[in-house]
Image 1 (cartoon, rainbow over the protein chains, first blue to last red):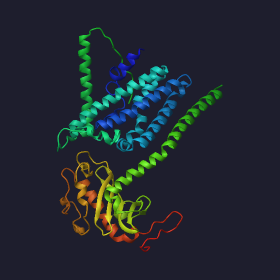
Image 2: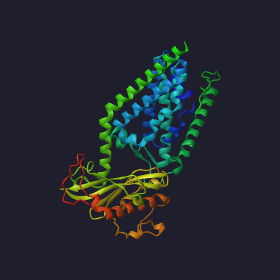
Image 3: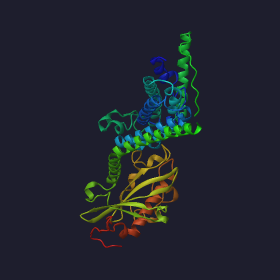
Image 4: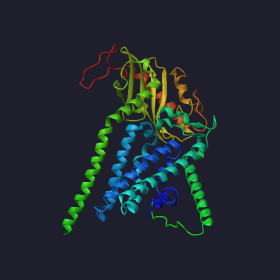
Length: 227
Length: 220
């Protein structure tokens, strides 16, 4: 498999958020603002890279019957480490993301990549796969977060100083003073609607692209996964 | 054959468990101090919003007392109270009750009361109220919670310590009644507890080795 295909898969053709629809719980729960989305995205990406790399390294040692428990062990240890690191270096953000950091363990996207990709591919490819899947997931989170933040509370990059320090506070954009907020966008149903719209937009783009390039370039079976 | 297979499999699994635990233990060990510092700073920052650093000269953190009152705090568990003193004289106390009857569960509050019984301020530590409605108890979203400052059991009278909708004298905010009602009740209960247990609340700190810190107040 070409490196380019791995990257394309992560960001577009097999995006965990838009195509595989994995990890919906954190995706929908934490995409209320851009900063929350970015925090969870980065944490998830780190865990994905780490678990893919570890799983790929041990793929020839681990017996098939041990595969799942070992993967779970690897992922759980990594998530705990990331959680502790976040608590130590981004405490305020940790308080906001709260329960969703430990819940990365249950993000199916991670074990799905370990099982369906990293356990069959070498280190370099697994790393790339983890990186692009993670960033693919992060970008869906970011777009959804931006949409919900603008519509829901009329700001963008609110609380950014929690992540990058007080000096970045100027980046917070307030579109309307005294904006009362649009509750639907803030609450989980807004996240579902937003995600639905994003998937629809992606499908329209895919269809247009296919119509323009009749030769099927990237026909791919979506990978099997259960949430 | 089977036994050997089982043995090898379990040793391998145990090995991974050890490596995983090792990683977590190492991270825990190297971040422990930093995390404790963060937690302390974060709480201190919140306490200092209510009673400012120049109003007291003791370590708010160490000068704590655990109090229990099932009828007033709505829980059998003990509630922490941070005492502020200046030159040994009591300045005020910050009680940290957990309000059980929020709209979506518990609301953790900080209720600061000056020595004279007036409120130094009330803040929400954590809550799960509805975004856009009940979350206006956060000082970031609205200044409703700030209006508690300098209220006391005489302002308004104890019987009027209810939201206006229930015939009391305290404003609620539109869209949510249950959340403000729960908070008003909890703040009132803190004030009631304070009035009845002032002596106990300011009783001298018991240092772990049973040495009593001298203050100018008597033991209860």
